[in-house]
Amino acid sequence: MAPLITVENLAKEFRRPKRHTGTFGGIRTMFTRQYTVSRAVRDVTFEVAEGELVGYLGPNGAGKSTTIKMLTGILVPTSGTVEVAGTVPWRDRERNARNIGVVFGQRSQLWWDLPLRESLRLIGKMYDFSREKYHANVERFTELLDMAEFLDTPVRQLSLGQRMRGDLAAAMIYEPRVIYLDEPTVGLDVVAKERIRAFIEEENRDRGTTVILTTHDLDDVERLCRRIILIDHGTVLYDGDHAALRARYAPYRELVVTLADGATADIDLPGVEVTAAAAGSATLRFDPDRMSAADLIGAVLARHRVSDVAIVEPDLEGVIREIYAARSVRA
Amino acid sequence: MSAARRRITGAYECARIQTLIAFTYRTDYLFNLVGLLLQVYLLRVVWTSVYGHRVSVAGVTLPTQIAYATLGTLQYWLFNPWGFSMIPERVRTGKIGVDLVRPVPFLHQIVSSQIGLTVGLAPFALVALPFAVLLGRAAGPASTGAGAVYLLSLVFGYLLTILLASIVGMMSFWTTEVSGTFMMYRMVSQFFSGALVPLWFMPGWLADLTHVLPFQATTYSPLAIYLGRVHGGALVTTLAVQVLWIGLAWLALRLTWARALHRVVVQGG
Picture (tube, helix red, strand yellow):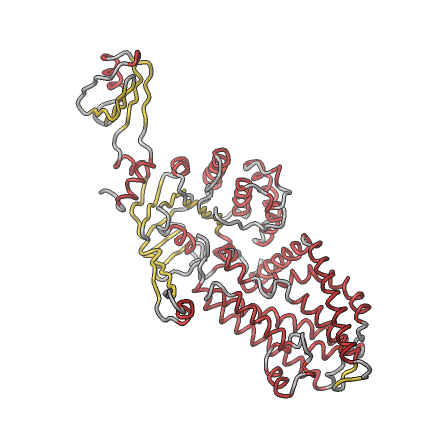
């Protein structure tokens, strides 16, 4: 099956007139012929199949939002090609618009002065969406996103979490094939985040909606995506399974043991490293391929009286932090 | 459904949204109207004092002049609800990003939004009209025919106003901060449209200059028709000139937009 989204050697440069400072700097800036060129996206290539849920990650200024803006047809790329559901987004905006939904966490597509219900209705009409399906979707979204209590409130009076739920509903009410979510959980509390994640997961699973998600919240990624595309400086650093990435970076687990009587751990086993030890507790790092957790626990129990044990998986955040710092992915 | 029908539906919905928004701010607009009526009244006071005991100045009678000033003020208010264009605000706040993922072409969005807002404001203007006529004691249309042609010419003048303002509004894609330029555009367009001073009071060279600029077709043309200053063959010419300017402005706007598209930068991440 042909991929739904194809991105090839995509690049975007921004040209800005060079700023002059000092006397008459402002006027010189106006008439300047010199430009500074910044390359937000240098060379990005990937494909996404229909029904995938992909996390598009990178540090601030890596080129994530610029890529999303080219995928949605807002920006015209400097070079390279994009095709979404058979359409070049910036060439045929109208057709592309009907295939996609977009949520920008930083700005709303709802009308500030109108009640949420009215915004949704107008969007349904603007996209010329079937009336029955529209009503069914409003009902379903109201339930899933718990919007009943603020459906008739003007958007400007909504809390951030409510507005974001409203924006999600607005982007999906006409059932687009692809949905781009640009930091949909930014600034939200735990409950609101969870509700939004559950909604995205359900739409992707039950409706087969393809989702491209950019976020700085790696809990979003671990909860929702299998595949991640990691970019920095406008190029792709990694494209694949995030579990595989984590295994490559952190092929270990940790066993945290709490010792009875506040004893100090005295454990010396081959292939096991004590990464933290204090009176009454110890953290042991081990490779699950070389030693099973059960064997390790057995060995610890043979030496000490233990009141509690816990196995900790290394988190994606640590891995990503390391990649960002190194600006490359280990082979 | 056909592409053409879809486009019309989309543009219609954009217009409706603005009409709804205009109504949510009705108290605001009502206050606005009080200011407008005050302006109409003051214009009458000034022109009455200017005329003194003279019956006519430069062949223009006082009631004609007052009708011109009253209608000119009302028209300007109705035609320029955004200051002059919605584009700079959309670019400055980055809302342009949202506009560009709508299934309605951006130019259609601009024009239909403006029309929608004016439709929302029209009831206020209708409320103001009888008061304005009373306060200003303005003359009625020269004839029923002149009144009818005035309405047609008014629609043309309105479309031209939107198109010209949108072309200037497009400048915000090149220079992000444009308020200074826009102030100047407002002043120039208002002056050369004849909204401040009727063309008949301008010295020869200035009136000539005004005639070759598009702005007079937005305000002066319909008013001159209303007052019966233009009739017979000149009536057809005046309307034709308006239509010509509309055509040229639409072409220029399309051209500008085709270039602006490559300049789109979405502000604020």
